[in-house]
Image 1: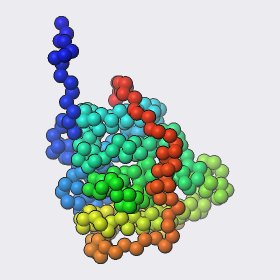
Image 2: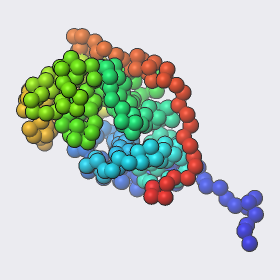
Image 3: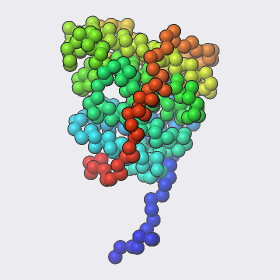
Image 4: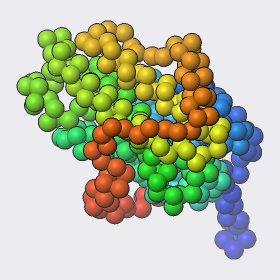
Length: 348
């Protein structure tokens, strides 16, 4: 005989889904160590509380990316069939994490914990998830503005969340804008480095208008006879990266020293990837561009003195769009619907 519903206990609402905080932090640390050597190096410079929250946020970002692309720790893309179903799963699990409900996925439970500790909002998370939605729709940028909007979703919005994790008031638009700038700069560097890998996966983040200007046939931009044009477009990406990264530095002035040092170290490490793509020119994709351990140490050391001086210089020319411009376009696209909460697919 079934128990009367009035004596059944509901699932308790607890940040982290009721999991032990130490266990969540340890799993998140393992995730960042496996997923990104660059972010691992930079994260060690934060104070312990900020460092742990950075790890917790990273674990969610990494897991969302893996679910969206049917991959493991950023590895080779899996079968892209069922992308909309995977996107729905991300939204449902994220909402459960915000509600303090267990998700059966440690990365989402970790996110629920850091969201509660750092005042992360559902809107912040949805702005990141929309980046996965664009890929699920096989979206392509038509213009430079479209490219920057994509960079906002997949990285600029993460920068905003990272600033909140570091203790920045979510209403401090100036610092949040600069955090967004840094995320956009990182993504532009990634796109420049990964042009051939993205093409192999059936993706292209170069604006269609750029391809037309270079007189490149659809789907032919990575062919050997277009390598010079590809290098020209990569240089455009790096020039944009440089402007956003320089403006981002202006937002570090008021941060605690260790946070400022960590952010400037990450900025140096990631922008060096873009600068190396530009230095190599047509040979940029013969071998994957990366920063050596010795190079990372050099950037961390240089960032220490830059953080001590604390007198950043902005770009000579302002980037074409700021967070306000991008958010206006995003919000005008329509209100965000609440995630459907019907059961997830059995395989997830």
